[in-house]
Image (cartoon, rainbow, N blue to C red; front, side, top):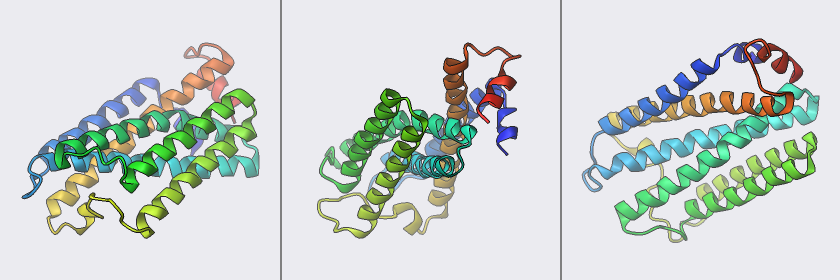
Length: 230
């Protein structure tokens, strides 16, 4: 499986990023309007699906990092680290879009809402884990930080799902609970597009990180560098 991923060219990776972003934005543009929120519902749903894609990526990162700690396979670490570098800025973008959409829709930044608190807390935990891994320069320490980041996200999601609503104004499971199939279809396309974009970016980031370790990658060096990570 990982061998096949290594055969994907940079050009294809860039195409995946462009296709993913374009498809998700097109689905958002074509999504129906809401009776109460109007056209702004499209931005809210797009933010939610980008967030969902990031969450899936973060959980995958933690699982791959745990597999590396158990097996010691260097290729697994190269993928979990690439996900770590990719998903932190992606999550920051998702949080920023969420804050902007909340301001536009509900006239509030919602800084005390549980979703925003979890977003900020994850950014702090993930940033500390990333910096610690860079400073310590130990792969196992880096993988532990990735697992901790994923567990922090899981804990935050559990708090959102099971904790008291408090000052939350975000609707719970708005897409899943909607009787309008068009909303669900548009949301599905958005999350698939976002996942494609994250995947393509992870491929590019992984090769960039490998190039830092092994020197600049040329076409003839790509196979050797990926084999070195195996």
